[in-house]
Length: 178
Image (cartoon, rainbow, N blue to C red; front, side, top):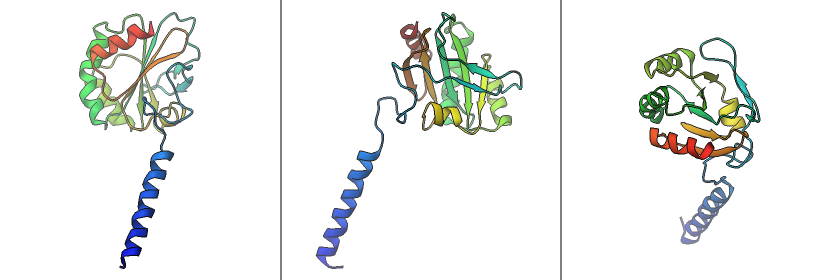
């Protein structure tokens, strides 16, 4: 190749990189535009229950419940979920989320491994199934897992935590949402 051709290829490659950076949505919550945002009402949803019982529902607003809500988005195949859930579930079972509504959303997962994951981690809170990602990727706009969303009693998102959550972070998020 001639030097001017290499220069042209370099300029085009740089232009594509710059356009990609400008086009990619940026936020401190790693969510897409139009999705759940801190300070906005939480998206309402209804998903089938993993246990096969009645649907798991979060109505908007959650006002009237006088309780904050914690939404935990996870999957059995998710490595950070596998690391976080034993301690997080234990903390919830031990009362760390007392006074809050805790809902798990099993996203983009198959039923059998999801049920095994829930049993292994002694997850006693309601678990909804979002197998197609309609709520996780659609309504909330999350890319990847895990995510934890804290919602105040008025139905407003107070924090979106991408990545694994520690029991201490759970308590801090709930304090902010109360």
